[in-house]
Image 1 (cartoon, rainbow, N blue to C red):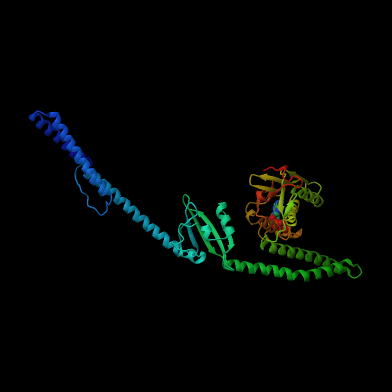
Image 2 (image 1 turned 180 degrees about the vertical axis):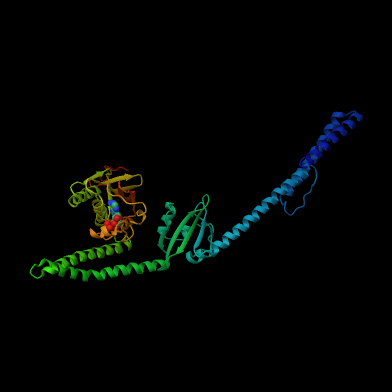
Amino acid sequence: MRNNGWTEEAWRLAIVLLGGALFGALIGHLAATTLVLLGLYSVGHLYDFKRFISWMDDPVSREMPIRNGVWGDVYARVSRLLNSQAQRERRLQILLDQFQSAAEALPDAVVALGPSDEIRWVNQAAQDVLGLRAPGDYGRPLANLFRAPAFQQFLSARDFRKPLELPAPGRDGQRLSVRAVCSGQDQLLIIVQDVTERYRVEQIRRDFVANVSHELRTPLTVISGFVENMHADGELCPVPWRKPLALISEQTARMQQIVEDLLLLARLEGGGSSLRQEAVDVAAMLEMLAVEARLLASEDIDISVDIASGWHLEAEPGLLRSAISNLVVNAVHHTPPGGEIVLHWVDEPHASCIVVEDTGEGIAPEHIPRLSERFYRVDTGRSRERGGTGLGLAIVKHVLQVHEGGLEIMSTPGEGSQFICRFPARLRAEPRGTLGTGAGGRR
Ligand code: ADP
């Protein structure tokens, strides 16, 4: 079947050549007759080729001019190709329609971006939440229309692991959460969710905890003051009361610590806008913390400092110190005699890290993801016994967050733990006295 056209064409050519040869032989001009016939044969094909080209201008609505021979074959194959392409396009269109109606039904705003972050498509929610127009804004860069510096930075940094939460530009009180997903080559899907309600509930919870803590502060100070006085005054305090008073004093101190920690957490959750940052000499800070830890720890624990970075760090000194001190005190509490604690200050290609490493009891893997939750303890009884509030690591995490850093915990039960506080390289500061010389800069 497939060679029909070609066989027919071969026969046609053979007949033309044979007929021509016979005729040429009869009239005595064999070569000239053959040449003329071949010429006519080529002109015929040229004419068919021209018809084919003009048919290709609109193959769908025009009739095929030739249905047999080699050209019939060509027309049939091209038609088949065009038909299957049209079918594929129809299927794609159906899929596209289904995707678009699903995306239209989403309550979240969806914006599809092209290679230069220009808008290709938006759903209805994107028009409502972001005020984009379809198709009026198609082709325009999204960053020009969604004008928030945090969003522009998010888009250009190309780090989409975490969603970005920000106040909606131009809409008071509204809060948005933006996620970005790479969808195919050079295509980005921006998904924006209105999180105003969730944020408001979180804000209420934060305010509630902060207010309760604040209200408890004064009564606790009064109670603790009186208890201290009664306990301290040997004559005023009858013997049977001494033990209970000592207990009350201890527990009041614990409550005061919890209240202070909760207030600090509330302040940290409020964001880092009020941070008073300065270049902190991390090496000197770690040396000081090591000295304090040696006073706290048993003599058998070896506590040392390893400084491999020459940078200072832009941070709020008080917060940074209290976070790292939390980690060091934890390391002391969880490292038995004979163990070792090392405080490192090291550089990575894009970050600088303070690492508190111990050879203590370690932590089982199932606890690690939850350690920085408020009041989460591996062993609640033991933590309470030594006055732990269960808020230490939550504070550390928040202190790092307001410095745009992060906490990583690595631990092996029975071998020890590493608490890695990672700060972005942009917080590195030249040590005083070396400004402009580049000294100490392990970049
Ligand atoms: P706590 O007040 O109980 O110390 P934290 O938030 O500081 O609260 O720590 C949470 C829990 O993490 C602790 O109860 C302890 O079980 C575990 N932990 C913290 N640091 C270490 C460490 N260096 N080694 C082993 N376990 C640790």
